[in-house]
Image (cartoon, rainbow over all chains, first blue to last red; front, top):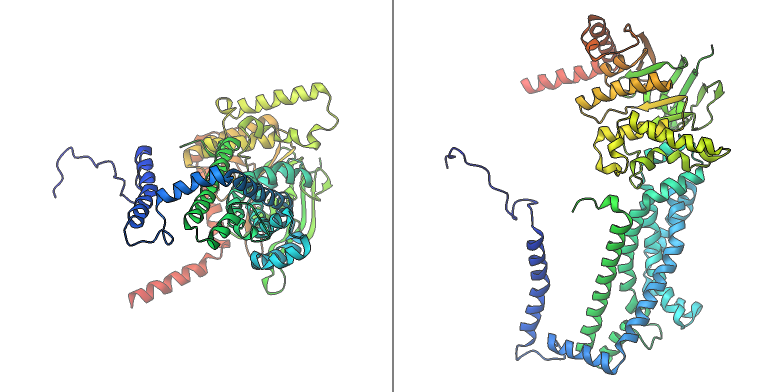
Length: 273
Length: 278
């Protein structure tokens, strides 16, 4: 087509490669992405041929949620699960943070700990259950121990990598201003790695939740994971749905809280949009 | 008067066995107090390594380096360094970056309250000197590359280092910004009187800034020629077009080409062209 005089290129549309998307459009698509599966679920489950035990509909699941809340103390199940995940995660974080800092800073520590950690992290956390029961018992601490085993080793390696990514020039600049080794670690390496470390915490928090159901295999009599397992025995498929969806929802909320903390704590990384 | 920096038969070997690389061999050079020396040379000539050895960030495997008459044993506040990039602290605002050395024990020890007050005044003065007043409370990643390097220089000057080492500090800047920075660093040199060792790959920059240009050659890294710059101490941009300047620039560029081992590359290029012709 011959170009007319005065013709201007149009603003690229949303389907241009890496094209723009207004925030209204973004939320529209996000809502579509969330509501479409819900609609599909509703349509499929309301077909006359589908057994409720096989696939309960959204309404059944919602009713079960209300019933669980009203009759079976849903809140205490949620509370105990959140407690287990958070405690296991925090114990991991408190130990992994200094270790990651040391591995990422001092080569001898890296040589001693990194191959070992790499080795252990490939061992399935689930397979540790018998050992955990043997060593830690069947108290609350055993559930926390399983979540710890599932998250700690990954966390250490990721944190060590975060620390290693601190630009050498930042460290060397401090040294040529007279910083001691301790000051370089405290005032430069740790400060510089902080945003990445918080991101690592956010990601590993998600993994801690995936180990919840496994952890509650160990002689639990409460919690979301335990409830899912129990519901399986009684073929309460709708309750399994409620449990899974709640875990997803709590995870999503925690993820958003981490993102909010990131924006508040590190404003220089969130200057635009 | 004894030299501010004295490099005596310095050698540096990286790696061992078949990976052994002789980065520097038998390098000797004296740099006088308040002198401005620039280092140029083909890649692999060891100019950055030499600067890092003076700064104590790299250790030499032969010879001796003296700064202020003392052997260099590691990095220290008497030898501040400015890097090409990524050296500012993005979590600190501009003013806090400049005052960073005040957070170090070395910067706090044995200070009278008058000295502490003087330090605040110095940070303000450096901010003005570098033309950063409007950026005092900005985050580093809000600034252009040129402004970021101004902050890095101010931060390096904060502790009144007697020696300032600069490793291609303007290498990532555009040509216009670089010219502005040249006059700024010359001004700083006149005002603060540090001894300046400056590594660059830009020959024009090397001549314009320096009292002496040290040309290094690779394989093994060594000093090839030292050029005295035949320009008045007060430099002006117009001097870049004078015959002396252009002659020296041409001479240095030719010598870098000769020492770079590029002849072999030219042979390869000819061979490729012949293959294409067939």
